[in-house]
Image (tube, rainbow, N blue to C red; front, side):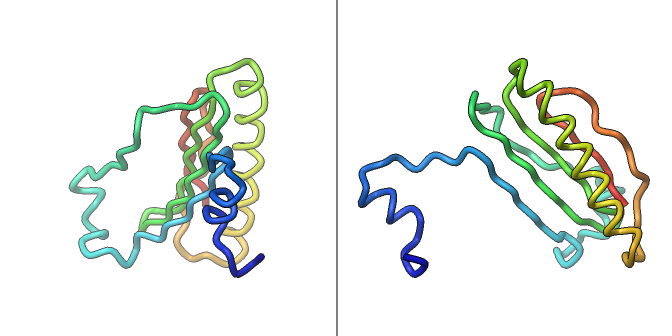
Length: 121
């Protein structure tokens, strides 16, 4: 089954494939012009679509550091659980960065909101 993509398995089972938890890592340091993004005030754009069952985590690395962004449902459980998880991930990424990464950014605590961005380093 490892040779069959998950989307194909879902299709064969007749089950709609809907992501519930997604993690994305991108290292932007090799993107042409990336060294100028700060002065250009470059920003990430994301959809405003929020699903009541989805939690997304983006880990982005730039010349300025590592940034974590989260999107999660604006529910009682989401507001209670995801910021705690975000803080745990922020500390873990900070420990990894402190153990060997040469380019660190200031570590900031994530705010309690539906979308959270924290710099780690």
